[in-house]
Length: 348
Image (tube, rainbow, N blue to C red; front, side):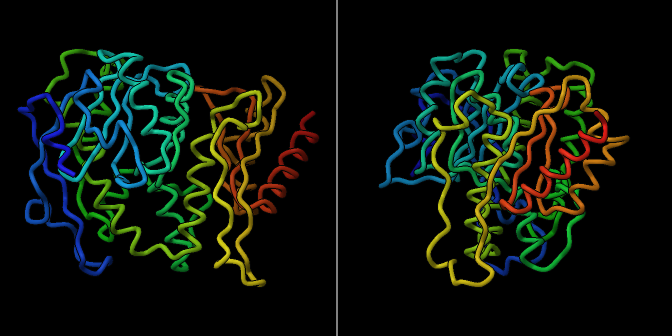
């Protein structure tokens, strides 16, 4: 697919996208200029500027794209400002402010499609913003943060309970890219100075470069990770990514309107050491008591993570308030629930 020619907007902006390599996945760090192609960056304010294959997903033309969102306090209550889409031959910056609901609704079929894989690093808040601001249920996600942890586990390396790889850390890992991302800190400083950074129009050169930088390496990392992941880890990644997508998207019907989770494949059921179903559990905490449940500097939650192989998240200042989210294999989630309920009984 030639996505660069399918955009009706001319683009004066360009960036490098690293090309997938057939070499050993543990090979030397990315030689960025030598292993990349120069592609256009398109600023999108109308659906007609996006590739037809993206707007009309089909099983005949399945896509894998890099994906990210930028905004102000990105969550249900914040403002989603830009959605970045990285194709092998072009990057599209979808302007949710100028394009508004009409543009975002045009993207809904693609974002909810099983035929388009969205490669993203930490999908939780992006998914929450899409769901509550635009009614979009983000689906078929390959979350590189989850994939990283599964590869570490698969290869026998023990991970600290609260050790989630940052995107900057992932890029720095020589097994995946081996590059420094110094510009990210520059944008973080600007965001601290002015939280409305992503709302300003027209987009500055820095904004365009920063938005593109957050997605242009994702397809390269995806290809590196897929080579490492075994069938069990790939199934677990698909299910866990789906659960992370719905993590903060609390509704009244227990996620019945979301796509069903991928069942355990028959080829992974052998009678011994079978994969266990993965679930999302949401526990309510009495209002105003979350701090005591978490413990000083998160000590209580950290101790639970150390004894249970489950991910535990708190809505925090962005919300949703007074809830704890637990994701993982059923037995581990039930164990974490029991410990948390015990902590609550001790407190109250």
